[in-house]
Length: 110
Image (cartoon, rainbow, N blue to C red; front, side):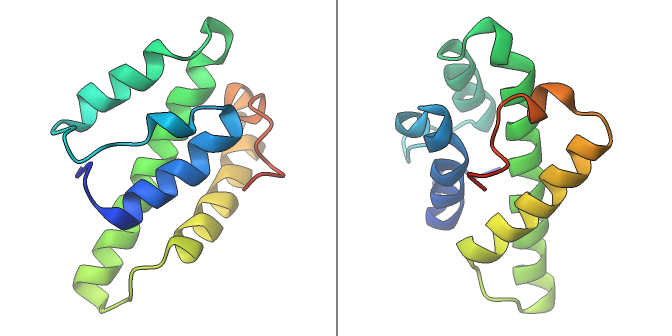
């Protein structure tokens, strides 16, 4: 996953800012998604780590799906569209029992 895509970086900011992690968005010099993820997790309190990990997995999954829709179906990149999809999927994950994700209290922020 790219850490330099402008659309993806905006999505990451929208996801991380409500958790006071807005300064952790991927930068162009972050060449590895995994290394960026590790840097984020170093700034997260222990009790929120599982929830933030779930949020990063959710964000990466939805960005990837949106990217594929743009490449293969001609969809136009849209931060707003990705955020709507993340909100819907977030709600489903919480209903399915993602307690730590739900514990982040993002429902109103998405």
